[in-house]
Amino acid sequence: QVQLVESGGGLVQAGGSLRLSCAASGRTFSNYAVGWFRQAPGKERVFVAAITGSGGNTRYADSVKGRFTVSRDNAKNTVYLQMNNLKPEDTAVYYCAARLDLRSIVVVTYDGAYDYWGQGTQVTVSS
Image 1 (cartoon, helix red, strand yellow):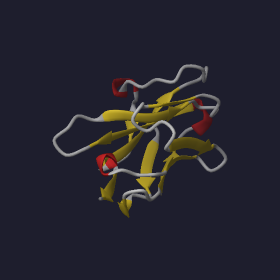
Image 2: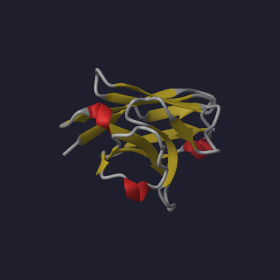
Image 3: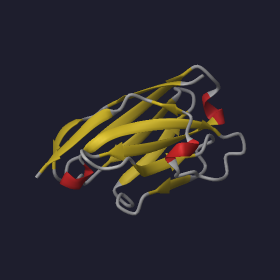
Image 4: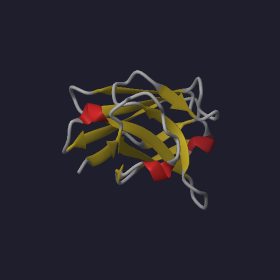
């Protein structure tokens, strides 16, 4: 079992930055890939970014490429999502999720492949 807790959300003006954290507990964290997903009001949850267990591979949604960076510190059992140049369309509840990833090669973007989820953190970007 893996427990995930997101933090770092808040209200920011367009063009600003936020850093989300996803703190994990329960198992060897480096064995788990972590994905970030977001859900805006009235819309489906969508993929944002993901990182393999070792941190060697990452992947981003086209909408955030060049603005968001996913990273991890396995010694701290934490994954980060640095979000720069935020836009009003980035407003959503952001969730981190984890899946067992022993080979640490392929980055999975499908949310159904993730077994453990945090409670979400709200990000609101004002124009």
